[in-house]
Length: 255
Ligand SMILES: N[C@@H](CCC(=O)N[C@@H](CS)C(=O)NCC(=O)O)C(=O)O
Image 1 (cartoon, rainbow, N blue to C red):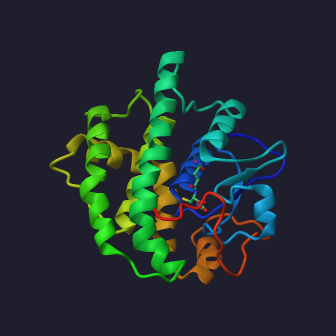
Image 2: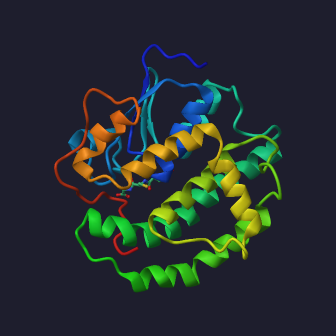
Image 3: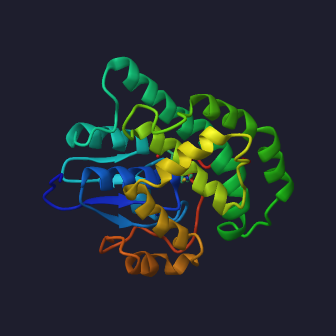
């Protein structure tokens, strides 16, 4: 069990795959945490000061205030090395980091910005109609290349580097957002990826966070804090949530 003088604060709700990655790592390493489960775009001015990019997650503890899920997870790995979530050896560690980067960038582009954004964020945050044609185009034109790459990487059993690692978690988290956007992956076309993602999603730390996120994904925004608390997510006393959404400097303008 990792120890901290007071629980770490994680700003960002678990509907974000990047937040789920960080929460799963905290769970696995036993890092005590509390969450301010804001939805992207809803941060106030204090949030802009904490992260000028206005992106979730933000992580704060007795020593750091940092953003970006990869930076946060690497910090947690160095400060709380057990259990290790990076493999042993420079080459394997570099491979794991590259898979994490592929997930955060290219899967983020397509799964989040092109599909989830259009299916969920546009109608529920910006009150703009969902463009089903654009979703269909992303699924037909962009998803297969990513899936083909993952299928080549996927282990037929177990995880990429033996035990579970940050690389497995980083990839698996994106598939839940696809499900919330009502996009199904063809199991017959990408069977190894399907099996690998299911195995990773089933590890207790990630399954626990995903169950909470599943409910929040069906919950109106003003009730997120109350429902998250009822589901057992430890919450911060205060929030940096604002009443209305605003675009950040990195918000993709036309995903
Ligand atoms: N590379 C960042 C990406 C974080 C990110 O894109 N978060 C999204 C939510 S899933 C966000 O806050 N978007 C708001 C915006 O871009 O304006 C990480 O790994 O943490």
